[in-house]
Image (cartoon, rainbow, N blue to C red; front, side, top):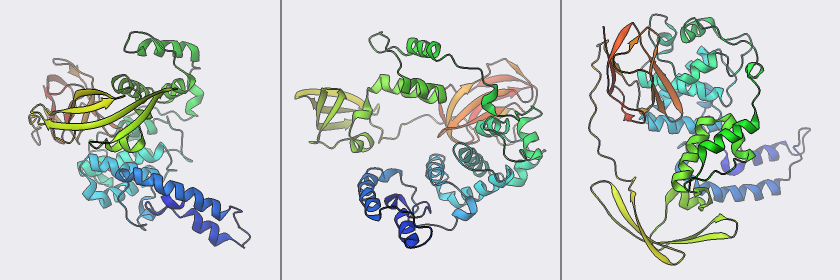
Amino acid sequence: MDAFSGGTSQPCLGSIVEALRHTDRDTGLDIAAVRQISNYWEGVRTLYAAFESGLPAPASEVWLHEMPGGQFTNLKAQARSLGLEDRWHEVAQAYADANAMFGDIVKVTPSSKVVGDMALMMVAQGLTRAQVEDPAVEVAFPESVVDMLRGNLGQPPGGWPGGILKKVLKGETPLTGRPGASLPPVDLEATRARITAELGDDEGETQTVDDEDLNGYLMYPKVFMDYRARHKTYGPVRTLPTRTFFYGMAPGEEISAEIDPGKTLEIRLSAVGETHDDGDVRVFFELNGQPRAIRVPNRAVKARTAARPRAAEGNPAHVGAPMPGSVAGIAVTPGQKVRAGDLLLTLEAMKMETGLHADREATVKAIHVVPGAQVEAKDLLIELEG
């Protein structure tokens, strides 16, 4: 649509319609209707300005990296969260290199994200394509890359390049058929009953999971459960006006939110107090005319956290974070013996998971993080001995 075009080098629909008019390839689309729809989305786009890709004009670099438009925007946000936004052109080159390394695959969701995960990891760790493909160089591949080369997204024509397949899977036999063919059938009602019992609500009662939520869980179980946990904490925030959801309210502003059919909340923000030493701020507001006050974290204030110990460069006993992120899970305990290739822990950054594996036989001496902890690149995560 015209209002969305250009920013990630996608062509303008209205221009295509006009260019092909009076030719054998006339689209038959009503240009007036195209403009009417575009005018609507032009207004909507202003609400999402904070999530723009930051590309002020089309760029020929699209012919280098071949990123789909949605992937471009998402990858920009991932690069920003990892502190790599100022190295974007390196990310674009790494994306092209990773794509070639995988055999110049068709890049759509989710394969485009896998290429992006690999590109970010290469830039964050200073790895070249040659190093990634070198069997002598140890690389902690993102979990999405491992999953793709296992065959869980399907097979490209001719299969995966043999060298990268062998290095990523470390001898594991990949799936070569259609991934869905080997999946067991799902008992929909049994699954619905199980997650209904797991979820419940704040009053201890259970609510039946509808078909939409059931489909969401079956396709994206972790994302769905994270969403329901947020919903349990914050309530139906999807009913808030878009601008309020993204940017909050200003003192004196009033909004309406229909949380159930016929049940509308009238909310007026009165004032926001000073931020306390613990990072909380007192908010004064009216709910359906009744004055209320609540303490909430002020996310505009950077949290003060103690610096973590750093992994000593060249010390084989230190397992450091290859990039900023959060600890998604820890697979070992102190005193546990591990072998080469055993999973130690998993890091997550903007939907990109990376498993860190032992490079040799050793014993876990100490674990310096807990699940959910935020870490920076080169923070010490685990110490090994032996």
